[in-house]
Length: 76
Image 1: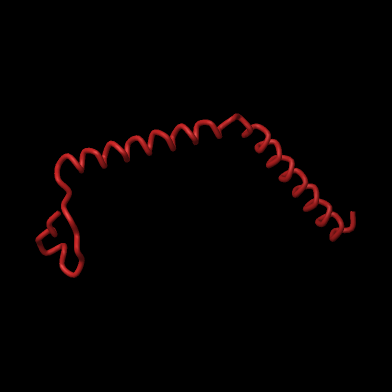
Image 2 (image 1 turned 45 degrees about the horizontal axis):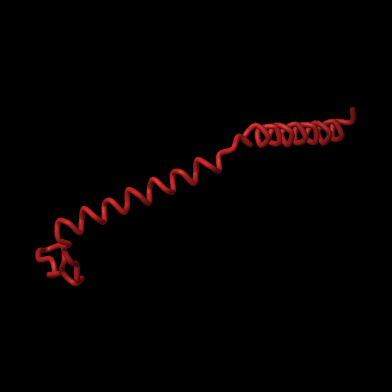
């Protein structure tokens, strides 16, 4: 491998890969992206309905507590 020449490579050593090495590196990156996409698809197992329910439950509890505090201050 030869160091790259030009104004961008000043102060750092950067190397140029041969054409076939670039293609192999890109193929490996594509395989890696595909495998991570498969992993993320497996994790999405439909539990969002439960978390939405929990969020609304906490909102309801918060509003009830806020009403309690306001009515306590007003004296009703």
